[in-house]
Amino acid sequence: MKLFTLIPVLLALASTAFSDQLVVSGQPKKGTFQGYESSKFQFMTAEGRFLKEPVARVAKLILDKPQRATYQATDGKPEETALLKGFDKRAFTFEKGGKDVTLPQNKVKAIELLGEEVPVVAGAGAEFIGGRYPIPRMDLDALAGGQLTPAQQATLAKFKDAKKAYDEFVGQSTAMVQDMDKQTGARRETLLNQLRMRKGEEQPLKNALIASYRSLTDVFAEPSGDEPAAEPAKPAGGVKEKPGKPASRTRR
Image (cartoon, rainbow, N blue to C red; front, side, top):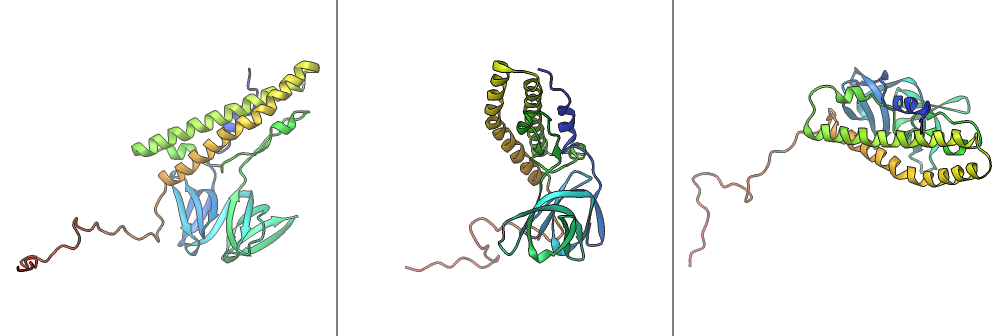
């Protein structure tokens, strides 16, 4: 079955270079904003590394374009959906109902991007296609560049496989929706039932894509400037005795 035109659109999502900027300790870093959690900015650099920068080190976040997101406040209220416009002067700016809303950093617990919007197929089958891509936008070319460790190569390959499987599945569903909109009677009913079944089949593929993305952020992580150096390993067998001082023995 021909996948029509949605596959190129899906392939472009989460795989294009963007020019967001995160200003860390006075130094601007280019890349793509990924989210905010536990008082840390999650950011993918143009060099293909994932940062988790403490908010105390970040002066500003400048987005290439405003991003649809959900945010959770520290007061325990239910999360809200808004347009994230950036971060400056220790506060996030959201757009809600056409008006800008500024929230200090200590009032925001987490921000999750809703992903790029997937085009909705018009017609009776529109309920089956559309919505938001499951993961944030990112630059796959940046990830693949440079010297990669075996673990990074394996994780990137797994992510690409998961992304391909999800994109192709959604593309096939799109083709079925477009076919169904042209049919009548029994043929239309058959396609409708098949699409209903595919909604359940899509979820494991989406979960696999999200899980593989999270693995990327761990394996391609770049240590932030506040992370302490690793402590030297302690000698085996406990505390080492000073030379020239024999261990005490109990006389019988």
